[in-house]
Image 1 (spheres, rainbow, N blue to C red):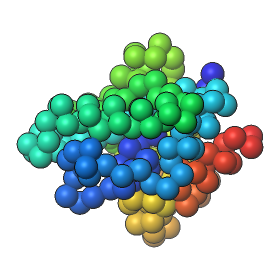
Image 2: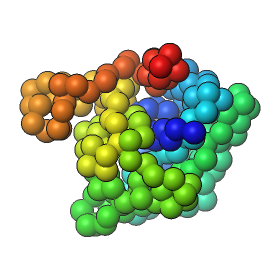
Image 3: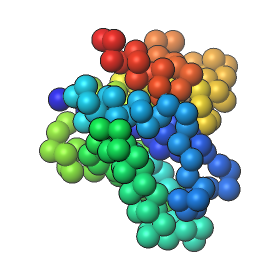
Image 4: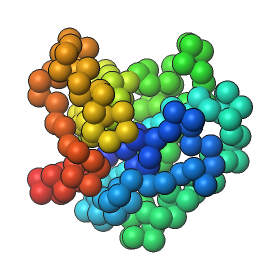
Length: 185
C-alpha cells in the first residue's frame, strides 16, 4: 500500500488564528472526510503530520488534542476509511525541536509507527512548512489552497526559490480535488 501524509489544520479541517482548541472548534472542510475515506479504501495508508504549538501555549491540553483526533478518526471510519497514524509536534516555533515542520521529525515518527518508509509518499499540505518538510524528506509535496494554501501559493509565485521544484508543484483547490486526481492515477 502507498503511504499518504496529510497536514491537519487547513487541509482536513478549518484552520483558525485562534487555534483549534477543542472538538467544538474542529470543523472538517467540505469533502475532506469522504476524500480520506476514499483514499484509504483505495489502498492508501493515511497518516497525519501536524504542528500543534497550542499545547505548549496552554490553549488546550493533551486530552483535548486526543479528543479532536479521536473525532477525526471516527468520522473517517464511519465512511469506511482509516487513519493509521497521527504525529504531532507540541512545541513552540522557536523551541528548536526536530519535529516541528519544516523539520522532518514528524515524518520519521510516522515511519517508525507504521514500519514503512515515507520517502516517495505524497504529502498534502497548505503551508510552505508542509511543502518544505515533504521536499526535504523526499516526499512528493502537494499544495491545497484551503487554509493558508492561497497565501502559500501567492508567496511561491513571488519567490520560486522558497521551494525546490516549485514550478512542478501540484496544486488543488482542496483535499477532495487532490484525492480525485490521486484516485484517477
